[in-house]
Length: 108
Image (cartoon, rainbow, N blue to C red; front, side, top):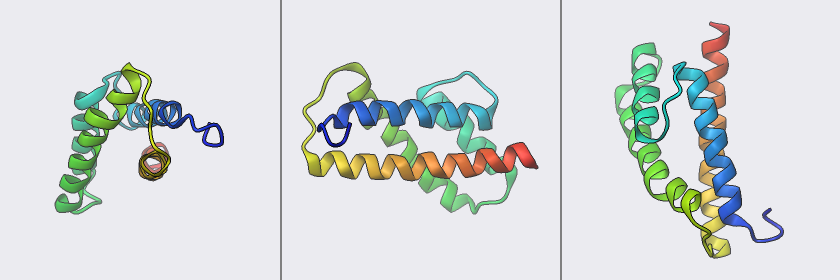
């Protein structure tokens, strides 16, 4: 997708992967902002992260879901390469972060 310049498709796929992983952690079928709130609450309940770190993460996830994922999920976008790589990089970071949380939840 990246070689073909299909940045909106990559963002859409990463958004789906992120939501899927967050559902594993929360055990819900929520989506969007409600899912973000449930995910953040599960992190706070776990008590392993500083509340300030979780608040910061919450803000970034809310912005990602509201402005980035929705924009690509509901229409085709012409995303310039620099913006595409920046968005994809950030989303990959979050997908990996949620995978680590999901692994911790399933093993412990």
